[in-house]
Image (cartoon, rainbow, N blue to C red; front, side, top):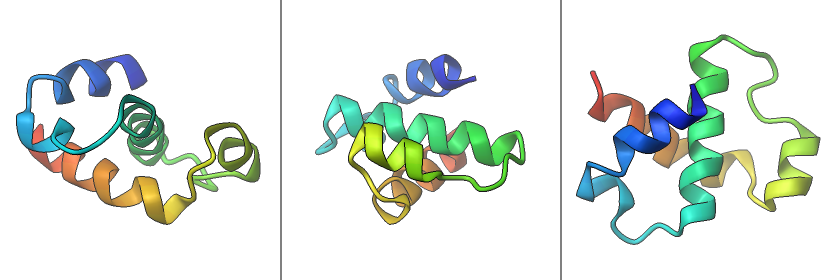
Length: 69
């Protein structure tokens, strides 16, 4: 599902404009976890490895999810 979101967002300039690739992928992970109803949606392990907080990836994840609906 992460690959699906990432590939889809690469076709939408408004999603990728001004965002670096690592944030795009982290947001795809966040959106995937939300879609699959994984709780918590953003764990300490994800924060440690990506160096992004949930607040940083949430906005892009939500905007990206909306762009495919």
